[in-house]
Image (tube, rainbow, N blue to C red; front, side, top):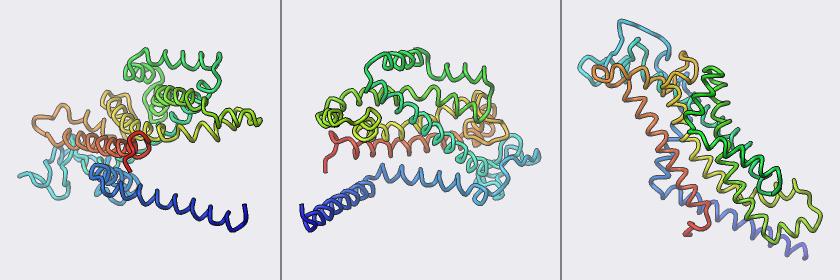
Length: 303
């Protein structure tokens, strides 16, 4: 191949990549559900990063004289507390904004760590069909034999509540889905001829896993990871509601729901707004996850 032909091939490849990016972005902008989900995620990120600036008050500042103050549009509401206050007088809007920070941090941390270990173990189990696969899959079956939330509660009850322990529990119980998905796809991908050619050419197992198998399972892992973020948010909220989450001094949406469960009739806003925040966040992440599945799965691709 001459230098001119090589340059033309590179330009053609770059043009295809650029066209795919434009098509990808265009599909996102023209999909109402994906766009809505993206806006929700963007608002969460902005709230998490800019919480000290956006929050109108200290989220842990108490005032018994202002306890259970209604939202600003209610008859006895105050513009100083747009969404009202909780049973000890803390500003709900400030706590919701700071709650987005901790929820996003836990969701991303757990997803990154669980996917890393799950992908690693899944690749090993799928490529090396031996005692390695047996050990990994039997351990995965052991975790799946117990209800997820019950297993998480048991582990936290032993280790104690706290941010790091909560992340550890969710990682330990969350790697199984990634491992099973990657293992199943690795078993299929390694049957392809290009994997056999790489093996005949003398490529090591590590190179085959990272250069040939991993790129072909990445799309499914990305979709699963996106959906798992929403699942982690719900699990963190459930554990915080039960008092097994992070330190009570750290505002989280789950603990806010727990704070308002005794005041649901005479102070509906205390439990309603954090509940809505959880619902909207999970809805937005799932919408983006569904869109990613449609884009990255070749069997569902229409353009």
